[in-house]
Image 1 (tube, rainbow, N blue to C red):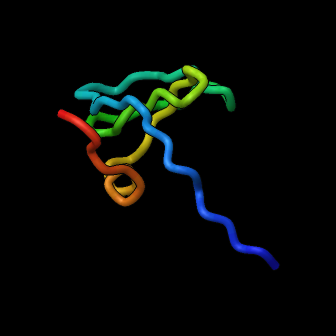
Image 2: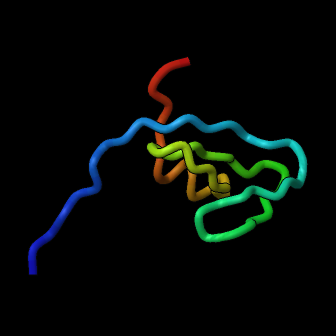
Length: 62
């Protein structure tokens, strides 16, 4: 079986300070305070828990 590496993609994200509902491609998802809201490469938005975000993303610019 072949192995693949995920391509490096720069996304925009911010950390929410309140509970909000995000309309994603998979349906509505609830983001909790502290979750990151990520805007994907095609403009789609989705929430991400802080621990997963820190393992998956690193800051590109300030």
